[in-house]
Amino acid sequence: MKEETKKYLLELSRYSILSKLGHTRTAISVKDVPEEAKSQGACFVTLTKSGELRGCIGSLEAHRPLYEDVIGNSENAAFRDPRFPPLSAEEASSVIIEISVLTPRQEISYSGFQDLKKKVIPHRHGVYLSHSFYSATFLPQVWEQLNSHEEFFSHLCYKAGLDPDCILNDHPKIELYTVENFKEE
Image 1 (cartoon, rainbow, N blue to C red):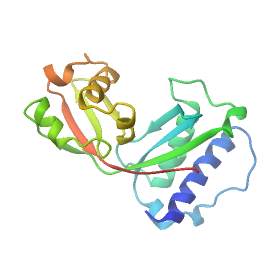
Image 2 (cartoon, rainbow, N blue to C red):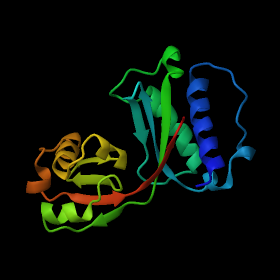
Image 3 (cartoon, rainbow, N blue to C red):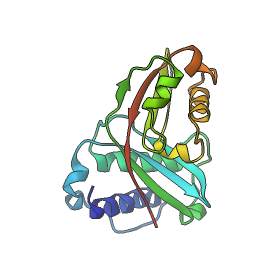
Image 4 (cartoon, helix red, strand yellow):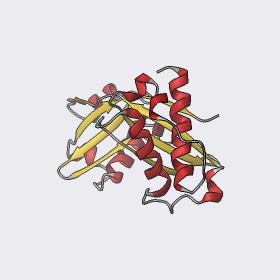
């Protein structure tokens, strides 16, 4: 993705959040949207404050133009992440915005955990795990906090509402994706 597109999407994200807080800024015109941001795209928007997670919401599949996905997920990360209270006007200037644009997911087959460890590359792959009615995902950036396969998959199973050992016992469906991520300076 071009640097000017990344810059535009980060500005669009911040604008979307600030406009919901009542800040008046010059509106961003659709005619100014870079061409590559008009294509269908899926993204996650992550907000951090003092290096700690403050909100993260996203789309796993492209279902609208990327710039629209950035708008929707920015507002949801700031105001609708159930793990956090809505972002306040006072906090808005202290959050850092990061956007992760996802590639389409690819299901992988694996014979067991050792085989899975060979196929899932830390810091490169995001993982979508699903089993029965349960599912969860971790972006590739999560490897920074959970840097072993055991820790990563145990937390992912737990996040999905499954037993932390589900990867060993239930053989859940695993889909991989990569991201192009960029954030405010």
